[in-house]
Image (cartoon, rainbow, N blue to C red; front, side, top):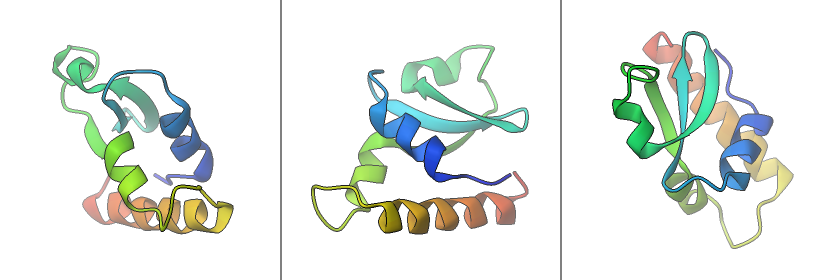
Length: 83
C-alpha cells in the first residue's frame, strides 16, 4: 500500500482532534485518535499522527519535496510491515 502526498495533505488539513493517518482494509483514512478504539477502526494500522508528521519537516513551511520524501519513507515502512 502506497502512502502518497495526498494522504499526508489530508492529514495536515484535517480539523479532527489528534488526527491520525491509518491504513484499514487496503485504504488510508484520517481519523481522530479516539476513533481507533471503535469497531470501524479496531485493528487499523496507525501510519502517523499530524503531530508526528509536522515534527518531520525542516521548518514551519511544508514543501512539496519534503512531503514527497516523507510519503515515500512512510510508504516503504508500511510495505515492509506487510500493510
